[in-house]
Image (cartoon, rainbow, N blue to C red):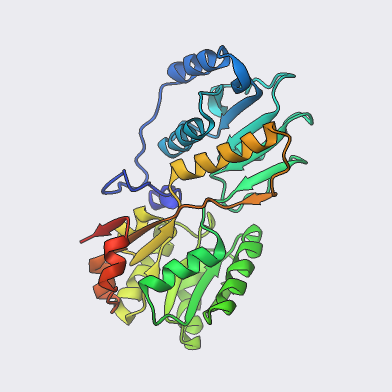
Amino acid sequence: MELAATMINQPRATRRAQPGIFVRVAAATVTAAAVLAGALPGRAQEVIAVLTSDLKPYREALAGFEAGFGKPIPSFILAAGEPRVTDATRVVVAFGGKAALRTYPQHTKLVFCMAPATMATSGTAVQVHMVPPPAAFLLRLRQIQPTMNRLLVFWASPSLEPYLRAVAEAGTRIGLELVLEPVRSSDDIPARLRLAMQRQADAIWLVHDPLLVNAATFSTLKEFSWENDVPFYAPNAGLVSEGAVASVSVGFREIGRTAAAVAREILANGTPASEVYPSQSEVAINLTAAAQAGLRTPPEILQKADRVIP
């Protein structure tokens, strides 16, 4: 489905989203870049990047990493061949689920990102989340809808449960209840939606779940939102362009910069946490969708939003 590709959020520099359409880089160019990067002196050779594919979001995250790291690093596309891990390699930075799930040599440490609902198999791994810290996420969401007291969340991927529990705990501290509704797949949502709404939720949040983020789920939640005056919050700005009310998300480059900070800490013989959240988040608001869902967003929040869609 085209919309499934938008689960990886566009940064605000990318305007008027076109879900599922990405610029591809020729394999020959990728290989040449990897060779050039591998020839660079210094600590860059201690770190390599492995990308699941050459999709634009992974490339933007890699660019953010190199900006944060201070220099280019050798990069490899899985579809183009095996990544070259040498004895000098200390850190492997994986972009995407397939890259994160590969087995890497024991002498390396894995930093993985752009991989929602993924649990890496490598023994020493640090996950860089694609979402803001739980408390910060809820605070910004509630600024958009100050009267929100109960938030309905559907989810299917078991690996998301710890994050959702953390969000629920953060909600308790500010008087916001999360109504967690586990489902087996997106097919369950239409039948479960009205039943779940009997708990009088004030809004619906579609979490970053690869098992649920698709065209069918989005259409169901958007239609329900517009027909029942219940704001619907999406996992990224691309879906806000398509009719969700708003999103509080993290841009690709910020994810890469956060991964770079983790890699630098590892090279300095530090011990980063097993899970790291980017510190900077972005807010996108769709004024038409907000009006259709019966939500009037405070003017001061619109002024602070990173992206406002008419």
